[in-house]
Image (cartoon, rainbow, N blue to C red):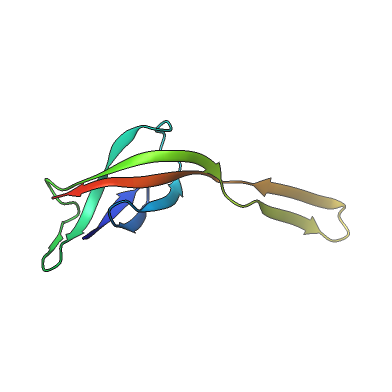
Length: 102
């Protein structure tokens, strides 16, 4: 059994008890929340929503807050004495699939 869910503007293929990393959802560590289900598949049946499935539910648990890899950027204009460096680390969360029901 697996499902395709939408978190923010990204889609994830998840299975029961799977742990995956997604953008920060605004939920605290240890809290459970439900995600929007786009597709639900059993061994022999596939249900596709348009755009979401009514009655289908994927419950996720926030395991940990973490950060992504550091991204460095640099701007430079020759002969103009212009240099600008910047860096960014994306705020992420580790999520665990508690249950899939449909």
